Length: 96
Image 1 (tube, rainbow, N blue to C red):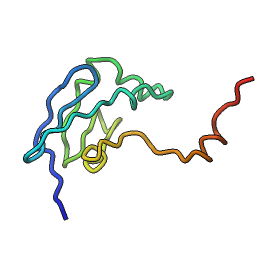
Image 2 (cartoon, one colour):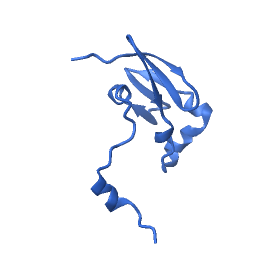
Image 3 (spheres, one colour):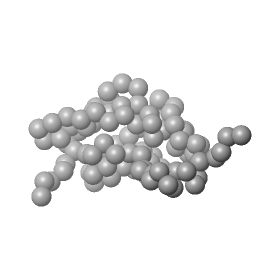
């Protein structure tokens, strides 16, 4: 089993962060997540608020855990939930 460990973070422009792991770097774009309809998440579109991230016990955290991304999700660059097509059809509003 591969051990995942983020050893550093650097800004990579706009709402992107470069995750530094042992022998590789990966860039993660948070904008698709931040453009949520939820106002508490959208609040992190303010650049000064987005810039307050930190690593805590391997997780990427903002504020008092207002936003928190587990290390595995960051490693896989998987920030948005996957919605099955059938569920999406049931929840999507119909345009008239």
